[in-house]
Image (cartoon, rainbow, N blue to C red):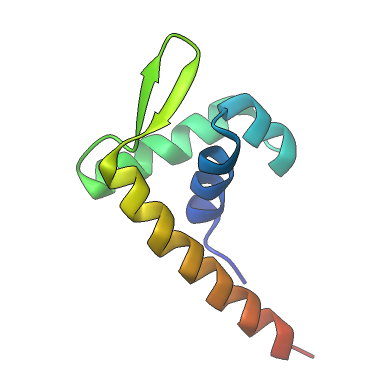
Length: 83
């Protein structure tokens, strides 16, 4: 069980790369961009600052990363009790 948008976000935050996250997740880079854009719209602000080819987490991004990581950890606990 997982929330795919949160998984995409955490992977981008960990790698600081849309293309590396796409490769790790086995999805296209445009799909990663779309997921991040949807999250940014839902949150109401940018999650990353894009400077040339460098990606930096914003304050909102840092806050979301803390929360999303906890949520994904809880999902993994649910998976551990499945038969």
